[in-house]
Length: 313
Picture 1 (cartoon, rainbow, N blue to C red):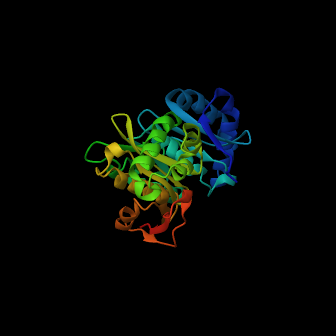
Picture 2: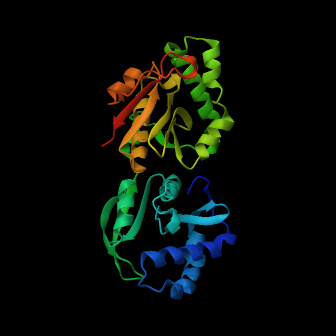
Picture 3: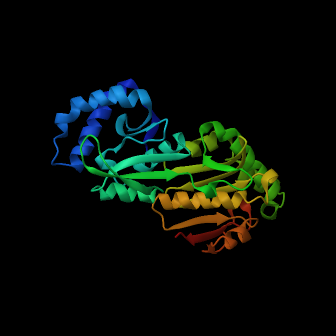
């Protein structure tokens, strides 16, 4: 289960647990190799090469280390290790997303050519083959793989789309509240009761909780450090937010953000995305390939809220 894992920066006190996890996972992946015999070498490399040069993010569940990822200043990902009981869970993708967040322009890595499972995982998460090499330590043939920020996440107006951080919560909350109040009049008709229900959970504290959830991605569209739009998608492919500031309407920001949300859904292994549209955005989603999947749900006291779905290629 992964319902409660937490991501945080590495601490020196994590060393023994991280090394033990490295040994356990690699031993299971390559049972013919004696990784116990390599622990002393690995501890020296960990202390002298990785810890000084890389940012390391660890994943904990119930105070037990479940995984970690290392990323250095050049964007090289040396290690991503996930406990075997978490294989197939969202944890590996969450760690990989942390590497992308820390190195937003590009991430490179080497993966053993015989590790088909890992190669498929990297491909699903946007990595492309960038050549072949030989591991200087093991002598095994490896693939060089590289992820680069998708050009579609940057609009012609210079707007970047990135993962939100807790520090974005206040500004993101303001965008959500203004977008609903000023742009969704066709839905709430300036009815104070409807607005109160709709805005009740749009507070900085609640937005922060959405940002830090491990099974949810909150993305923001940013221009010169100013947030213009906010979107979110769950690991199950449900797009729960896609709101643009009134100041950025009709600039293509919502469409760029929607593409980024759909790409994140695909990276999480989904073949379709679903959402509930306002009356205001209904034509927008229809034009983006969504189809209606049921009668209006009337959320927040409105008469709209259209369930919609789209198959993702």
